[in-house]
Length: 235
Ligand code: F6R
Image (cartoon, rainbow, N blue to C red; front, top):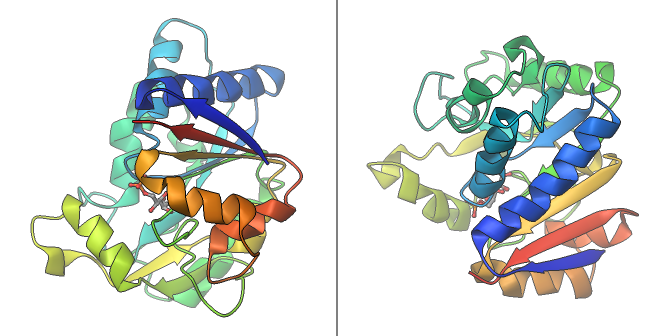
């Protein structure tokens, strides 16, 4: 694993954007795996800026997001579809039909997980995967557990994640208890992985990079991936 230090969240976003824009230039129809949350915001802002300056072209890019809350429509302002539209997709020249997220309103959640796996497979897998990391070491919504997950699945969110994410909801009891997430195997199959983390995640990033590889710290599995870059902001 490579570690890059950034002095600020803005610098973290620029360093990540350098990797993303280079990768898109090298493969215009690249498949990007994307994440939501606070940490990728400076990266997304930088990608929008670079698109505006003609440095980045998303016309052939495809995206698959890591996760979505169960029970929220894409139009709900806390859904991850809404987040992606508002923080990236609406401001770049991507074809919305090439942006994929699990459907949090699917009636049959198991069938939805299978559909999502088929989407990932039909795209040929992820070329460049963006990750954040939870305070408990989660990747996507793959929470600490007794075994590393394989493919897209429905998960129960832990209290730690519900508390962390309640900052975005007007009422903490509104945070969904279930989510659909790509599995650890899906993440590990990405050709290249970029993990962004702010200073508050330093301890868990240390455990993930240097600690025991255990499903109790899902991000520790990244030690087995051949091409991971962690960009850690000091802010
Ligand atoms: C969301 C996701 C999560 C977040 C993590 C960190 O799509 O994949 O694993 O990356 O919860 O969230 P922030 O960046 O808000 O601290």
